[in-house]
Image 1 (cartoon, rainbow, N blue to C red):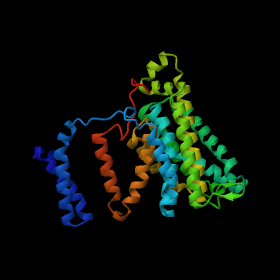
Image 2 (cartoon, one colour; image 1 turned 120 degrees about the horizontal axis):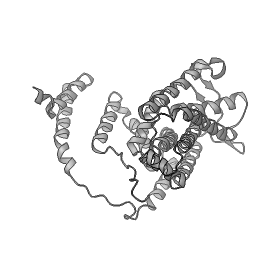
Image 3 (cartoon, rainbow, N blue to C red; image 1 turned 90 degrees about the horizontal axis):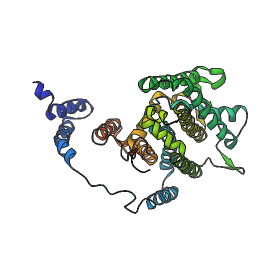
Image 4 (cartoon, rainbow, N blue to C red; image 1 turned 180 degrees about the horizontal axis):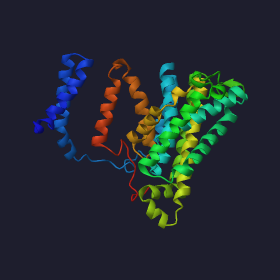
Length: 364
């Protein structure tokens, strides 16, 4: 009996039985066959040695980014407003994933409350705009710097901890921010949220239209990638990598590990503040329900899915986790089940993520 419970047949049968209440018997049988075939084939797939072409040697290292930028620049001419709206949200989440990747991917500091800094950026712009009348452009650096300052305030006591303890502290901070926003009625209007937020303007011309706003977000993501890549290959980026690989060894080599981890927190949360400002300007409304713990989990999943420590991997992870639920919208009852199954399969067969980061010993 014990042997049967650990067999592929038992696993496939369990999946089929769980799926049966959601669909008919025929669908459950089909799922049983596919799961059984996948589990049975897994040991053989693991043994396959698939040759990989070095990215630089393929001659595509410079061509692919240009091609990708060109395609995204032309999309507004071919897509409807609904799809542009989805792509704008992808750009905002890409900024969040890039910021979290600095903290988690570059320095190895687990953060489970990143949505708090996203909320701080959004609410800073919302309050500056609705209460003080400041526009988008003067509010953008203020919101980004305030989110970055919040990252420093959290980092000073939190970075004394490591691993699970650091994760718990950041999780708690995220919940504290959400509860404060939800209960401080006189300042944040509580669960009713803040409405009437203005979109950005350039020389009196509104960028609120989806096509214009798409290009704004698109340009900010390109700027973020450029800046983060430059930092990654700088002295600071090397120090972050050294801390991630071995903090004790980095400290003995003269690296101020505490200071550099604080730099990572401040720099990563800076992009969360920008993303929050863009979100508030797009929606023209913010409320605490948009910044729950599940948002932090989703952003972290994007970083893990694309590859921890890889800038382009974070963007790819954001693209998949924003676009895939929309593609599965017709299968409303099953899309999260399918999405979760895909993530489980990925973690089994490619735990380093779809792209993954280079080893510390490899030339970066």
